Image (cartoon, rainbow, N blue to C red; front, side):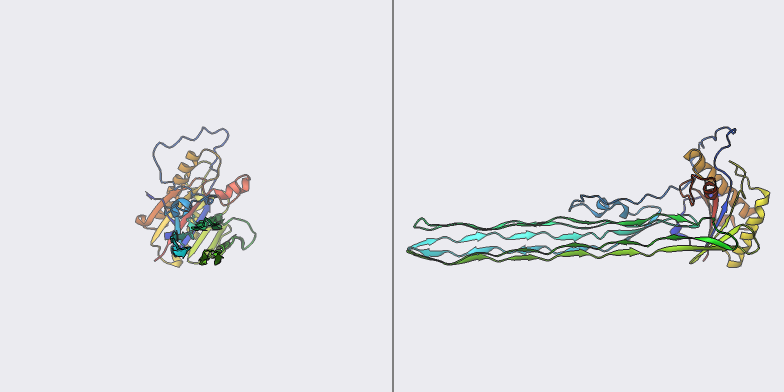
Length: 394
């Protein structure tokens, strides 16, 4: 049977979840051997990343918000950057003038440029998840670069008679970087709670990233009035005021999502979950495997047969991915290996007894990377020990 690491973004139709037995070795059992060959266990999705507090203005987006870098196991939607064009404050020339029969030379206040700034709006990340789960989602932070406008000076003037007209200084303006904090929601998986024909729903809440603002800036006018003296007059001079527009980042949101469940008709313990174009089937209890084993129990075949029958009613699948999961008892290496062997066992049954095309079936082992319940309780660990079959239809 072929093994593959599978991205949920390419799976569109059905999902089967069947709970097996413990991934924990019995107290008197010998320690599980560490597999010597590399198996097809899929890596755990990366945890959402916190934005840096001091993101430098010159940092590329991938360095500022690393989660926005494309990678296996997630879908990244970049939010369009906004460019604030460079703003040039032109030079000011104070013209030469005659005073007391002599020429007072011109003065030049140099131009100032506020460089182009790029508002980084970040990205939305949807992390892949196994069947029966809603993947984690994240909205990265956003970044508005800061800038500074230096102080501008109307220089002093020394007149031929020795009179000094003092310089006039307009204070500079500085706007710091604005960093907007991101938002995230963790992966959630369908649990096996509820009684009768009702299976508890699972809900991933909506997330919202707030808007961010950078205020407008204004540098005031510098003005020296006309001076009337004994030897003549000094013309007035001024530096115009400067206004720098404000900037903003709009808020972003990702809506909530949910999975609803019910019991498969004609069975006592097979749960069905519908989500858009996907369907999941799950079975409670120690149905599939004995403790620390990968051989399917004969009594588990009735549940598998019921699921195969339901899949056949929905149409012929175009691809089948079988995923194995365990609880967190024991080493990571052992659980990864056990989850892959169990996925292989179910995949083999689907081909040999369920009539599925072997060329359509791949497997992946996740170990305890994607729990759907609390691993600190016996009930939670039992739910986490499962095999998931994902069906894709054309």
